[in-house]
Image (cartoon, rainbow, N blue to C red; front, side, top):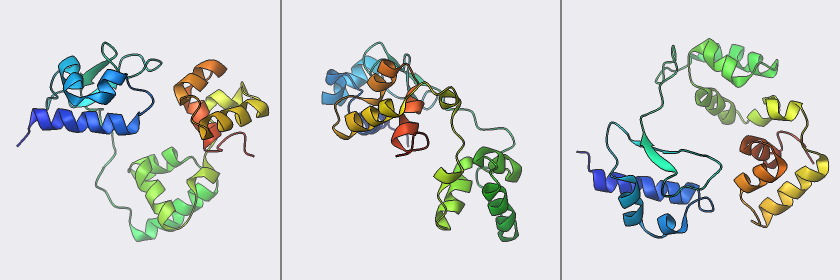
Length: 182
């Protein structure tokens, strides 16, 4: 049975764990404050969502949102047949993006990544640079500064993205060495 109070508290705990540096102090300190500002979680609106992603989670910048729509034509519980695995691996090794391979087999990107991980294949080596980095807004010195600041927890990813005028995804790409490898 759905318990809105427990469900709201659970959502608060997940947010606090996932975004420790990006949450208003009053929300980080108390699930009751979070529940008072957000209201209780419902089945119709089960997902917390930030209104402005450049600002921290906090009063006036978050709301309950509906579930994200499922991708059309994707079977989330479909298994890939054993005889399809060699073709899948061939496509990935040929440089076909994981998203395209997933669409071809009618499964999620995560299903393809799981198959690759079980075989000890790094998805990282097959990832194409993101659109933000094709324009090369960051220099090698910027990338090193981002890594240094992240290692010392001097600034959040959102703050670094704002300082360098790139998206948070671009900062994560540097941190994961998808771009600007050492």
